[in-house]
Length: 275
Picture 1 (cartoon, rainbow, N blue to C red):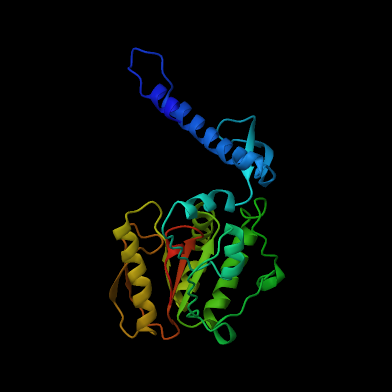
Picture 2 (picture 1 turned 180 degrees about the vertical axis):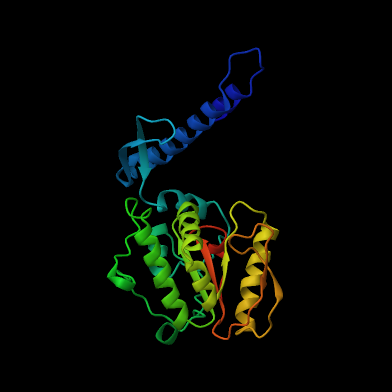
């Protein structure tokens, strides 16, 4: 490793490794050190993988050869042995006994707090295969661009918003699909029908953290207010189709209850908790 680092930090007029080459070699030798540690005792924890895929921008096939470590204990064991204490925290580590087994260590102290959600009374998990009109809700690459699918999603969401109180969080697999579906709903009038049930907010794409938090605050406030009784009031927050982030409600709608947030899975919203 030191030789690689020295070769990459040589004088400009002397032949030396580029930064990318140095990083690649460091990663390779680091993996090989673990691979051959203990006279090759961990060799069976590795697999050679050949990947072949097409890059959209470049075109043509790209082939990569990979050395994958399938056992996290190979690396974590050294970390645990060289440290006085290691603290692991997460909301998704349970059950801890299997997690401990995967890392190859025993946890001296464990704490599992009860979940804030009562799974018996607050959770109902199901896959909705068809929307109103019995149209299949298949968001595959081939069908996601079809207007019939986008309309079915909008109609399904409208029916859900009628019966779900408070907040409704809707995740999309990508910003691209979120934009397509939202645009379609504006063109067909579905967006107005959705907003008649709840105040709809959209995760801002590529904006600052302050802008995102303002939208999130507007979502929370709409839920806390419940059914709105004030007409002609400005609502701060990014509403779909309004670039300046303001919207004026000019009509009183007693049916509206709470709010809905359209977001992207693993986007900005994913790390926040919702009402």
